[in-house]
Image (cartoon, rainbow over all chains, first blue to last red; front, side, top):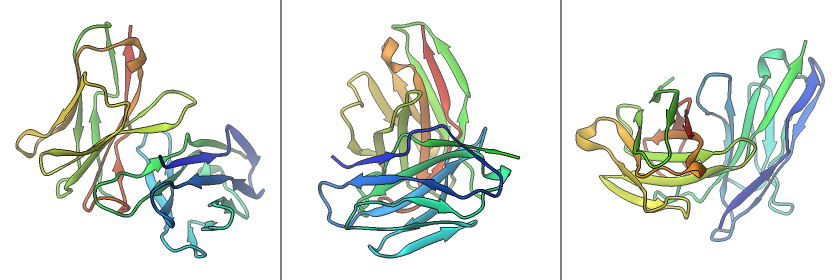
Amino acid sequence: GDSVTQTEGPVTVSESESLIINCTYSATSIAYPNLFWYVRYPGEGLQLLLKVITAGQKGSSRGFEATYNKETTSFHLQKASVQESDSAVYYCALGEGNNNNAPRFGAGTKLSVKP
Amino acid sequence: GPKVLQIPSHQIIDMGQMVTLNCDPVSNHLYFYWYKQILGQQMEFLVNFYNGKVMEKSKLFKDQFSVERPDGSYFTLKIQPTALEDSAVYFCASSLIGGANTLYFGAGTRLSVL
């Protein structure tokens, strides 16, 4: 079945440093799945950070960006300069784009940003 | 933004008993989901539900599990009987359209089976 593997956490960086959280995917029943990053802040549910549905495209939100790379089957999340408020758990996810199948998620990567 | 509420946030139950996890989805959403996450492991898909029916379920959705949304109220996950390996955080989600559309999640219910 479809699966997602992402950087094992926890990850700790200092404020204003750069960040990369790796995500690779395996899609068994569709050549070009839809790819997502969700974020979960303490005490809240997961919320969509960004999504990309076309291979080769880049998505961005709140200073984060991720590029859909079909050659390496990757969708790494990057930010040039993190803030303390970015401390959260980040989940990479894959969807097949049809109504009957739910997205599949990675294990989540816990990010702590030190002031 | 739209909110999904899960009640309670933590539930403790003895092995073999029945438990019902409640989810109040976004009011106009049509698709509903349950995911399960054991600490440090994948957030695993359990089931999705639409128009009163299970659309897709994973191997983790054992015979002891059932879902329903009677009369458009709470979307529930019932486990009967519970087992020790059911201890996990259960996340409910809903979406307006299925598949790759944006999911809205609750904060999760931590289930501890003793």
